[in-house]
Image (tube, rainbow, N blue to C red):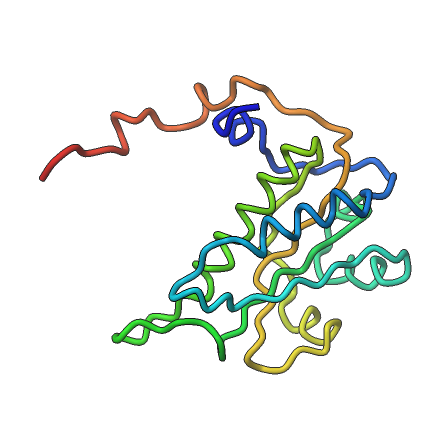
Length: 172
């Protein structure tokens, strides 16, 4: 599959098969995150992989959507604000770096015929407590990973995305 085919195939899955994600595939997804670029190469992230049934039950308490409970694996992607690069004006690039990592991971999962859903609307404090995180570590993304039971319209990008003419300006 070409890069554009992978990018167009990625979607937010909300219905997963219960079968476990193979260790080799999970490792490839994590490796795609590990090699992602970051500001000044500071790599201010940490990945928490949750697969055990009792741990998943706890993780499902931080985001109350029934479909989320179908995921056989959840990766909590955290940003370390003590390690992230800050621009001169104070702008912290931690969220940007974690966004890049998450995108790498979702695209790798797609290539492996797995599905994901980028979740940011979760209970931050419950997640902090669940992972016993220090104040400088911020849970930024919940990333369920698994084999999809749903599908998506393969031509949705021509229908639901703005055309290039609306989002690109050439020259000044």
